[in-house]
Image 1 (cartoon, helix red, strand yellow):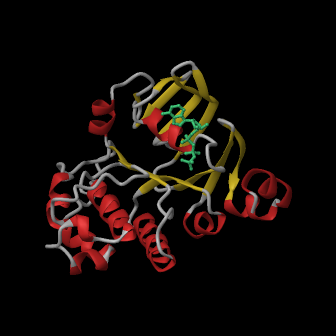
Image 2 (cartoon, protein in one colour; image 1 turned 135 degrees about the vertical axis):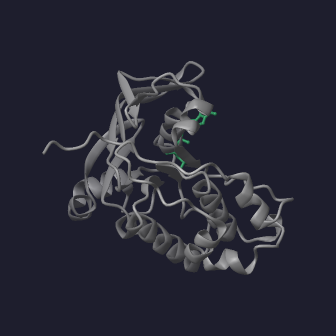
Length: 244
Ligand SMILES: Nc1ncnc2c1ncn2[C@@H]1O[C@H](COP(=O)(O)OP(=O)(O)OP(=O)(O)O)[C@@H](O)[C@H]1O
């Protein structure tokens, strides 16, 4: 039996803000069902990698495929329609809508994998089981939530789109430790339910809790690719690339 092609496969990804080149020949793959951590210090290029994948910055790639489709120069709305979900670092929830209304904004039709397996559609009820905090505040204005609760809502709203792959930008950043633990537990549960995730993360502890593999960026280049165990045991790389 041959291995199935990666869900996401990128080779030679470069990106620019104006004249400034930020990414240099980034290669990465995500297989169906994997949780992969894109790591690196502040300014290493993690968010820019995500923005490149969803088509929001100037980018070029030798090749970039998602679900077998060439996305190397696709518009953001096409990439979203193909089933790539994105949770931005700044969350972008609608603060004048309730939690339940925010979820409805994200709702998209159910999807079926090319092999015929269906993706169990996300509903508010199913998401409330994943994030019990949200269920207690379904009618609350989203502006009256803590940063961590807003982060959960942002993830939940993206899942309402039934994405094949979720890009999650710094899920643990700026939230209280107890919510960080809940977020990690939710990601582990999402993986158990078959959701594929590429997340960016600076915190090695958090990444070790949730991810199978990691790519570590430094100055816009991948400087390490391997399993979480490999980076945890590699003191030299860990210190040099993550200061951890
Ligand atoms: N809109 C922009 N215009 C110009 N340069 C930018 C812009 N956004 C980011 N940069 C630069 O691009 C580089 C990579 O930034 P990026 O936000 O991708 O890093 P990051 O790894 O996600 O870090 P952080 O954790 O701080 O978000 C940095 O040098 C940053 O200053």
